[in-house]
Length: 171
Image 1 (cartoon, rainbow, N blue to C red):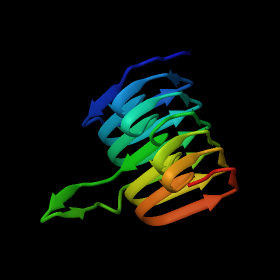
Image 2 (cartoon, rainbow, N blue to C red):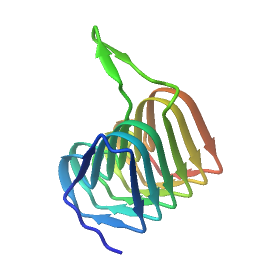
Image 3 (cartoon, rainbow, N blue to C red):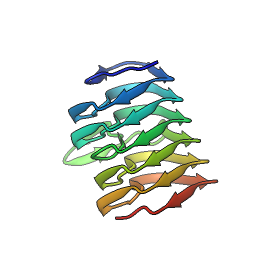
Image 4 (cartoon, one colour):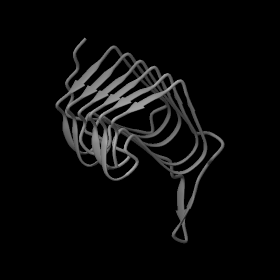
């Protein structure tokens, strides 16, 4: 199955599934291939995000305000401005973020992130979350111009990295 969308943008959706899909050469300001806000579940299985560009963040996938994100056997290759950008913010009160840290989980299982670029977290940039789990993961040749050659996490409560291979990544 080949899917070539300019942008999937969904607001207030409970579940989004992408199965055996390819997102190739898409360009957007935010979320080159997919941009989602306020979702319960985003489940990506055996999908590829290749050569996508975001002018600000999330070239492959941009997700804001979520409960569960699970990427299984996905491939992110040559995306520009962070292959996956995940941001969890519930409210901004008195210039401070209020975060629901009991509901958000990000899981990458048997996924590959290769030759992605970005300012922070060229492969994965995750901000304000509870759990970031990376299992049986392969990251090669990713480049960040500032921080996090592969993964950049900002205010993440728990990070679990197991059976993972990082090679030739730089920041």
